[in-house]
Length: 400
Image (cartoon, rainbow, N blue to C red):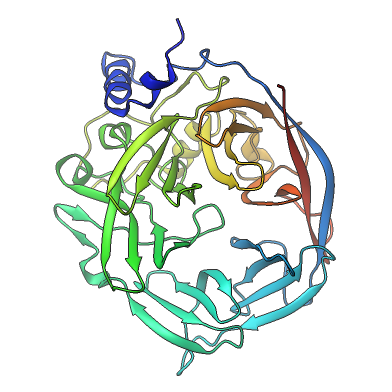
């Protein structure tokens, strides 16, 4: 019998059932709902867009943002070599502007890792590991600086605060004066079981109030997931109500956090093709774990499935969650060039269906995907043209 929506949305019940499923000797994270829902979705490629690169830029970036504007919608990316944001007309693909930021001085913002473009007068910038953000304008002038945290206090014996690590799929989130950023904990320490390890930071620009939230799910606190970023990195997005959505690579559920109430819950968003995910080790965690050999971790990761970015499509009121499927020979070609699929959820985060992308020699860079009124855009992992960066355009078709 299929579980009802009410049962699935009852976080405490589902979490309890999931823990029973993984704690009775199975030593894996099983997908208890893989067969519970009908698959009603297909995805089709409908076009592509290419953006011309100048001599100072390349297509190997880690941070892009689609800037929604009724009169001038823009595609943007961060050039870390120039410490600059490139702005393109999304309709014509022409370069409009390059905003170069100083690293030092009165307008210095450090070496940028990410940004959030609100408008030409308000661009939030962040330097990795600084514990600070700045509010600048499109001329590169800093209007205000904010100290988020003292990085010297980031880790204690019983607590680890998030050190934001922003990327396209874990971006700087902004809504109603609140800046939210995620930061993964890339160690495997007993601090997770005896203390508190938070993954998100929330700072109110208007009041200066800061808070930390969202510990790793129980499966992370219980087992070893190989250190590094294979399974410990997180993907974040805002939902239609400005709640924070978190996609953990080893969790079939999405986690939803309301920063106003401080309440979080989980919702099923797994793949029918992912029946289970096995941890690297189930041995008890040590306080100062030195880690396994990198080759052993890679060999374990590649034949395993994992979940990736979560995106909200406000124009179609849909959510997209990427999933990667096992392939033993993936490392011979390109890191993370594993088969990719997409899970589609409706406006209430209910499962609608999923589709596996066709095998491709150039792969799929789901880490730099974005959504516009025209559809979903995904860049290939490998580019054949150094003079431009190309994104393939997709549309989701839902059977009624």
